[in-house]
Length: 82
Image 1: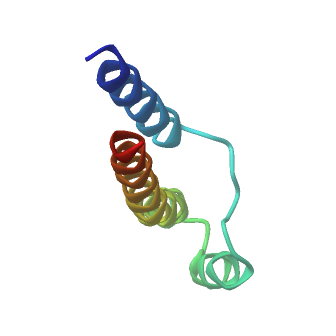
Image 2 (image 1 turned 30 degrees about the horizontal axis):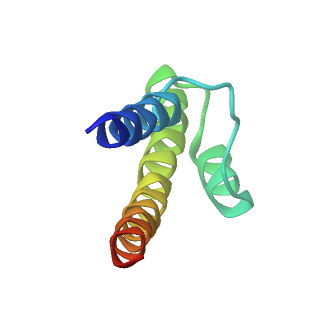
Protein backbone atom coordinates (compact mmCIF):
# COMPACT_ATOMS: atom_id res chain seq x y z
CA UNK A 1 0.00 0.00 0.00
CA UNK A 2 2.89 2.34 0.75
CA UNK A 3 4.39 1.70 -2.67
CA UNK A 4 1.15 2.62 -4.43
CA UNK A 5 0.90 5.86 -2.45
CA UNK A 6 4.51 6.63 -3.32
CA UNK A 7 3.97 6.05 -7.05
CA UNK A 8 0.76 8.07 -7.05
CA UNK A 9 2.50 10.95 -5.31
CA UNK A 10 5.36 10.83 -7.85
CA UNK A 11 2.88 10.87 -10.73
CA UNK A 12 0.94 13.74 -9.12
CA UNK A 13 4.15 15.70 -8.61
CA UNK A 14 5.18 15.11 -12.22
CA UNK A 15 1.80 16.35 -13.45
CA UNK A 16 1.94 19.45 -11.27
CA UNK A 17 5.45 20.27 -12.43
CA UNK A 18 4.59 19.69 -16.09
CA UNK A 19 1.68 22.14 -15.96
CA UNK A 20 3.39 24.93 -14.07
CA UNK A 21 4.13 28.11 -15.94
CA UNK A 22 7.51 28.34 -17.58
CA UNK A 23 9.21 31.05 -19.59
CA UNK A 24 9.52 29.04 -22.76
CA UNK A 25 9.29 31.05 -25.95
CA UNK A 26 8.20 28.30 -28.34
CA UNK A 27 8.44 24.54 -28.43
CA UNK A 28 9.27 24.15 -32.10
CA UNK A 29 10.55 26.40 -34.86
CA UNK A 30 7.51 26.03 -37.10
CA UNK A 31 5.09 26.96 -34.30
CA UNK A 32 7.18 29.97 -33.39
CA UNK A 33 7.35 31.15 -37.00
CA UNK A 34 3.61 30.74 -37.40
CA UNK A 35 2.83 32.77 -34.29
CA UNK A 36 5.37 35.47 -35.12
CA UNK A 37 4.06 35.88 -38.66
CA UNK A 38 0.50 36.30 -37.38
CA UNK A 39 1.33 38.79 -34.63
CA UNK A 40 0.71 42.43 -35.42
CA UNK A 41 1.34 43.91 -31.97
CA UNK A 42 -2.17 43.02 -30.79
CA UNK A 43 -2.38 41.80 -27.17
CA UNK A 44 -4.82 39.03 -28.07
CA UNK A 45 -2.40 37.58 -30.58
CA UNK A 46 0.46 37.60 -28.10
CA UNK A 47 -1.74 35.51 -25.80
CA UNK A 48 -2.22 33.16 -28.72
CA UNK A 49 1.47 32.25 -28.59
CA UNK A 50 1.31 31.54 -24.87
CA UNK A 51 -1.74 29.35 -25.38
CA UNK A 52 -0.02 27.52 -28.20
CA UNK A 53 2.97 26.75 -25.99
CA UNK A 54 0.76 25.47 -23.17
CA UNK A 55 -1.14 23.31 -25.64
CA UNK A 56 2.08 21.76 -26.88
CA UNK A 57 3.19 20.99 -23.32
CA UNK A 58 -0.24 19.51 -22.59
CA UNK A 59 -0.01 17.22 -25.61
CA UNK A 60 3.54 16.20 -24.67
CA UNK A 61 2.46 15.00 -21.21
CA UNK A 62 0.22 12.16 -22.34
CA UNK A 63 2.85 9.95 -24.03
CA UNK A 64 5.01 10.17 -20.90
CA UNK A 65 2.05 9.27 -18.69
CA UNK A 66 1.19 6.30 -20.90
CA UNK A 67 4.75 5.00 -21.02
CA UNK A 68 5.13 5.46 -17.27
CA UNK A 69 1.90 3.61 -16.57
CA UNK A 70 2.83 0.72 -18.84
CA UNK A 71 6.30 0.55 -17.27
CA UNK A 72 4.82 0.55 -13.76
CA UNK A 73 2.35 -2.21 -14.62
CA UNK A 74 5.12 -4.29 -16.23
CA UNK A 75 7.34 -3.84 -13.18
CA UNK A 76 4.54 -4.71 -10.77
CA UNK A 77 3.52 -7.85 -12.70
CA UNK A 78 7.12 -9.09 -12.98
CA UNK A 79 7.70 -8.51 -9.29
CA UNK A 80 4.65 -10.66 -8.42
CA UNK A 81 5.92 -13.55 -10.57
CA UNK A 82 9.24 -13.72 -8.74
